[in-house]
Length: 224
Ligand SMILES: Nc1ncnc2c1ncn2[C@@H]1O[C@H](COP(=O)(O)OP(=O)(O)OP(=O)(O)O)[C@@H](O)[C@H]1O
Ligand SMILES: [Mg+2]
Image (cartoon, rainbow, N blue to C red; front, side):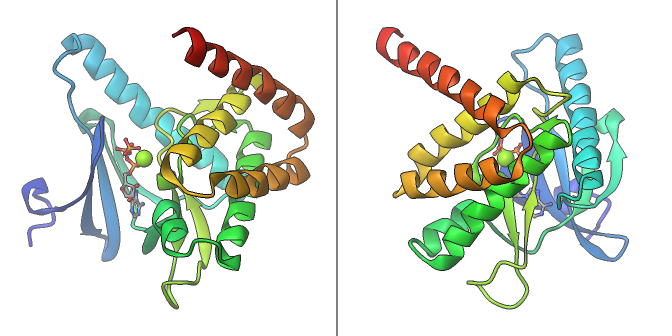
């Protein structure tokens, strides 16, 4: 395999704005995330958005890491090509883990870890912008049913120094994602929010705001 030729890399994920490839870099398992061009955007805007989101992703990862939140180690950034190379987390997404181990103690523990992790990034001044169970990875080394470490990925829509509104929207986006992707989502959500409330210093303000965001969401559902 030619490690310098993207045509030879293995495609791991095709998203709406980016492709993620698996490769080896500096002798270790890595991924390359490439934000591709969206042809419907004017070229100047397209280039600006891809560059901004690449830089924002790395900034939010760095700030989260400083706060003690596990994120993949960034190995290289190529803003001219809109590429981030980072450590490949060996394991599965939280989505896959939850679907494979429904109703188990391991899933309850995972939900608690998710709530604690969101509290940590929020207290560190980072909002994620796209919290779904596909954006949490479970590092695994000993077996399919054991999570060694929870790792947060995909900060491209993240923001720094968020207001309570942005933190509440983070929780709301996760809530909606849980409802649409997982059975028994209410139990999961309750465990996540309980852990968030225990760990975030500003939980009261954020959860109060979450009520307002939910009310807006309901209104939109009713009136389009
Ligand atoms: N560091 C990593 N280690 C292992 N797998 C990864 C890593 N980063 C991303 N992936 C895999 O690639 C998928 C997509 O990555 P990511 O969420 O960063 O890209 P995205 O295109 O913004 O996603 P989407 O638009 O689907 O939310 C992840 O859900 C995960 O399966
Ligand atoms: Mg993602």
